[in-house]
Image (cartoon, rainbow, N blue to C red; front, side):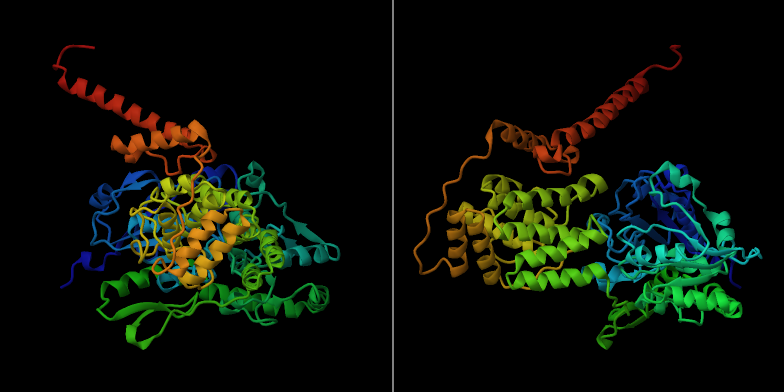
Length: 612
């Protein structure tokens, strides 16, 4: 006879960020995070940890069957928690959760977190995430958005609002920018203001039941999935509250089961007025489409229809050698197959506007049409002003145009986003490699040489090439001049597939453009091969700018000698990264801890009964 324990839910510890600060701004963000926990609780006993913690201590306390780590979030209100000792309890499987937009500039931070925590399998809430993180596509599954049917259902509200316009409508949402004004100018509308997430004014926006009731009282509610063609929560909330969804036709929306004039309305700037006029003249058609959309959501897209993380847990538990787990689609189930079958997860192959522009720019750049390539990359920033792929490519363009200072500034900003704004242990390996190359192009070789090992866990083919150049320029044996330096770290960047010879030729030409002919000669010699030819004399390096930078380097070196690596900032010892400010922030809490330890020690030695 089986015991009760045999039927218990598996235990899941969810390391979730502290999202509570959003309660005073965009409260619906906090609601979304609570709904994620509620969804997980359909299959797991969930224990949420949203404070700084020791992983070993948490595992000892809760004895989890699975741990899930939220990472990569971008909200300015939420706080990223610190988790130590994640290299313990190796028998407990770990998953990462990329809880962010597919194009988010915290993706490099997410990958850094995953490396630091020893996590190799990930879930994302964005259906387009595999297209934006191709380096981890094989181990990336989708746990897509959903609704809580206790919030989004038919309240029986009298439909008195012809159209409700809700959500942001800036550059990221080109469909809304076109369609919303056309609708607003023709039909009576309930228009929600566009407050930023972190704004206190966002607390005044409708959310939860009040928002669902407003949708329920509306005939038609339009939304879109951004320039990335994503499926956002509104795609499910609108029909889930029994309003007619009007939206943009995309591959992801169709994968979710939406069909034009059957359970939704596909419109664009060319036909939105004509089609809405038709529907408002045929109320039976609106009712039919609205009911079908409502049925679709409540049969396929509620929190009870998102078992993917539980499916992975159950499949992984019985996974045999030679087997792997795949997903049938972004809204599909997970199954296991034999590796030799060559079956792969089915991902959305969309036409995200920024990806199209990046590909066009890359082709132009390979043809040497730098100015036209720059135009493509800058157009990407019209959609997402912080898009890291576009910024890296603009830095490459600047190098090829001889503007090393511009390239350096762009790369500094990229590294700051990941290491300072997000707080990751290290930056994207490709961004770090090109940061070092930009230093060389500025004539600051000694600085590049000193910094090449600053992030010891970083490795990547582009970084290997940067180290090769540094080693050859220094004529030293302390650099890796061939082979790989460890296993490649995953990068969010995809660069042209070039041989070492082609890459060295490109960088030599780039050095010439940046007025570094001596460096260019050495790189060309490396490309030609050192044997048989006349060796070029090592360049004469100019010392880096003065005593100030030597102080930065000296203090950082002293921290290493004193074995205080744990207190070193995660940013390079340079003034543009505010190294001393970050060092002070780390030293003050450490000093306070030391003082507390001394007080505790003194109290422990104090005889009992000595009074106050």
